[in-house]
Amino acid sequence: MDNNHFDPIPSNAGVGLKPQHYEEILSLGPDANHQIGWFEVHTENYMGAGGPPHYYLEKIRQDYPLSLHGVGLSLGTAEGLKPDHLRRIKNVVDRYQPALVSEHISWSIANGVYLNDLIPLPYTAETLQITCEHIDHMQNFLGRQILVENPSSYLLFKSSNMEEPDFINEILSNTGCGLLLDVNNIYVSCQNHGWDARNYISKLKPETVGEIHLAGHSVKEWRGQSLRIDDHGSHVCDEVWALYEYTLSLMGPKPTLIEWDNNIPALITLSQEAERANILLNSD
Image (cartoon, rainbow, N blue to C red; front, side, top):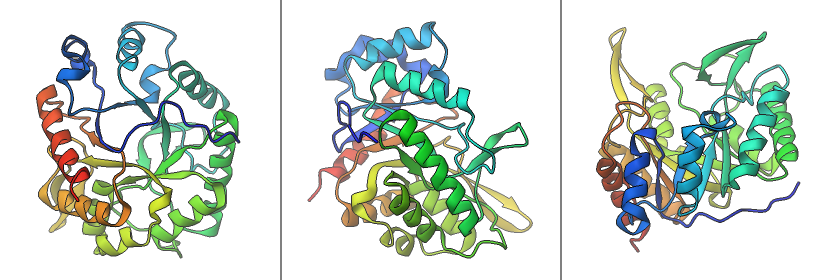
């Protein structure tokens, strides 16, 4: 496997690129968008051969580093990876030469049926082996290292016999992939399950972290209890900002993405969130 990195992303803040902002980003230019150092896109949105998405991304890519974030490969499925999906990912990677390529530690395909969700895994030796085999397959096919993202979860599997950070560390050790550390996901899962978020983060190895995600979440009442939902539809909350600051104290500065996928706000709002992340990234 070739571990080349293309057009590296510096340890500053980026945002998710949305079609609503294409024109404004191009009209303002990188000097006016100085709080936004890079962009991330969902790989599946650029798997077509042409059209407006590629027209705009090609122009924006000329001025900004890029990260590709996949949501549909289903690394944890009991079935093999879909060859066509993997080939289409490689086409996008080859076309845009992103600095980072990532996928989720989750599954979404069973018996040929695609479920439009990122479903967590039971943490067992069997799922560990399957996931590692699929990561190895993906990395070898792409010819480069990928990052894998820790999940957000709402229920626990009785069959799990490993703690989540230990499961993740085993994946990283066995495959040589890196970690996309989603701080909001950790906060959501720890609040839902009664785990200690700082203890979780302290178990992760700083040198494995290639990117950090920050996002908003919502709170729902379910059976008399509060359940936090990772919906990427609001500002990053103060508690997640505090957990992010703690993460940086352990990990040092890392490229940090502001994720906002629902109720898309104005570009200035994303820029302001990025500015807050940059302040923390640049503090001593």
